[in-house]
Picture 1 (cartoon, rainbow, N blue to C red):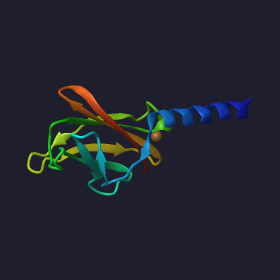
Picture 2: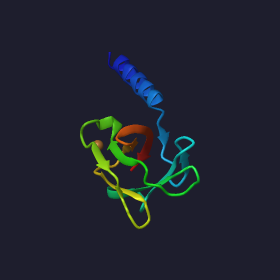
Picture 3: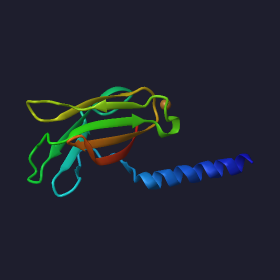
Picture 4: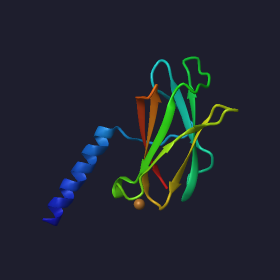
Length: 133
Ligand SMILES: [Cu+2]
C-alpha cells in the first residue's frame, strides 16, 4: 500500500511538473516573451539561505530597457506548498530601470519562482523556474 501511494505521488508530481513547464533557473540569460518583450533575471548576489534580491531587466523589441510591464514573483517550495509562500511586487529603480524584489529563502531545498508580468493590470506572461538553495 505504501509503495502504491508513493507511485501515485511520484506520478502526480511528474504530471504537475510537465504541465507547469518549469525550467531550471538560468540566470543572466535573455528570455524572450514575444516579439515585443524579453527579460533577463539575476540575483544581485549568489542566492543562498536568507534574503536575496532578484533583479529583472525588461527589454523592448529593440533590446532597450523598458518599464512597460509590472512584475511580481511568487516563490514557494513545491514540497511544502503553503508553508512559506511569498508573493512580492517588484519595485522599479528609477535611475537604471531595473526591477527589484526581495525573496526570503528560509530553509535549504528546492524553490519554485513564478515570475508574473502584467500589462495594464492584465496577466501578460508567466515564467516558472526552479532553483535549489
Ligand atoms: Cu520549506
